[in-house]
Amino acid sequence: MLDDHSGPVAGPAPRLSIPNKLFFRIGEVSQLLELEAHVLRYWESEFPALSPKKSSSGQRMFRRKDVELLAEIKYLLYEKKFTIEGARKALQEKNKADVVSKISHRTAEPPPAQNPLQYIRQELAGILEFLT
Image 1 (cartoon, rainbow, N blue to C red):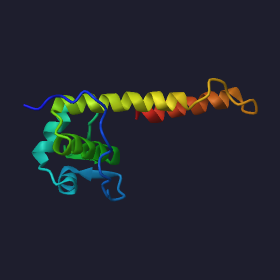
Image 2: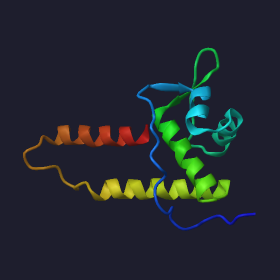
Image 3: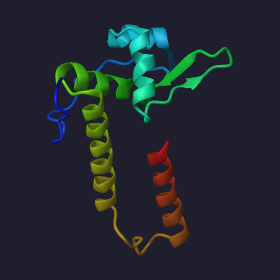
Image 4: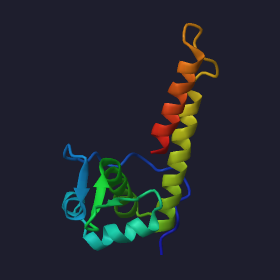
């Protein structure tokens, strides 16, 4: 059994050419990532950040960010040889690092020429964007 890699993820996942669409069906994602559909469904149960919506007919509909996350999971599991738990932890650490980075790049006070309410709206919109 492989160890859970506790260090940071070494290097980014290779860039994937994802078609410019809003939603992808599981069959499309399966072909794109060269993975079986049952693997994608299993990963959905193992990685909480992965949550495709379902159509009225029950078909899984993946967004672009879901496909990018799946590509990253595939990279961690197949290329970097992480365990499921190790990949989950690595993704959590990466998300925490991204949040800290975004927060550290922002200033604590609004620029003097900007309306404070406008500044607050922008900050809340940024938080909402991050959460979705």
